[in-house]
Length: 214
Length: 192
Image (cartoon, rainbow over all chains, first blue to last red; front, side, top):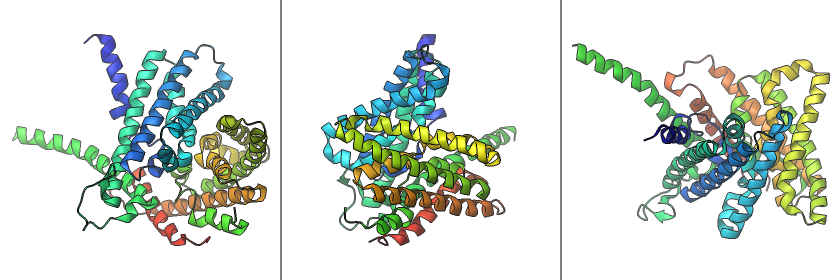
């Protein structure tokens, strides 16, 4: 692998693992909790956000040398709003049912802090290609975050996955999981799991070392 | 729409609380709810921005519909909200510099508070008239303040209690929010 491809890969992986927007940076919470009642909604929301993210980061990066510093945030917002409008109309044309399910949250992608954060922190300082690779990584990371919530909530709350029934007719759905409190509980549990895992790592390493010394 | 103003208000305040039932404005909800002293002013400032934004959005929507420019709605709403936030910032800076410093970075961040944009978008989608829009945005703002204050009070108490290391931080806040949200579900159907 040449150095440039390694760097591109690192840029891409950053958003998926080290700086995962959902689990590490806790950004973009509103759509994360609101639309993840089913895996299908979660996936479409993730993909739409990723598309807006890649397109706006690309454009912000291309315009980075001609954008005056004082009005940069306003410029970013207008760029993002433009792409969100495009995605909004596209989803309406592709699937009206999906459009109704996601509701106002497609338009609310505008105020998703992940996109503005990426534009300001990365795209404004880097050439278009790395900026778009980084944005793609963030988008995929966000989609993974949404999916991990949507899958759990759909299985527990409705007994289905992508609309396919998993259990027999005897399954009593845990309705609270698809209602608002379920969103908070499932995300809280994921964060607990990750923090437990983080805490456990040093302890385990220390124990392995101790065993070797004995 | 046949909803009365009172029903809209109660719905926005309790039954469909913006934060706990509709998941709008979660970033400030998790970010500023650490201390009661900042939570309340933050809620009031957001409510004010919501009222101004809702007023402007209502007028703007009439204008855009008259010229069939609905596709510009999102872009113009966000510009309006940004200006409203700027206005609140200037007023606060002049009349209450202490509060201005206390709110710090969270004040400009009201621009990206989805509850504010949410108010403007929902009132358009539900075709509320002028009075309904104002009542809706006031109820939403009051509900946001209520959720913020409740959360801040609980978190202030939690600082004194012994929490397991693993649960420290955002995970704990989310669990708390879940329990609050669960209790707010008791209001469902209140607004008829």
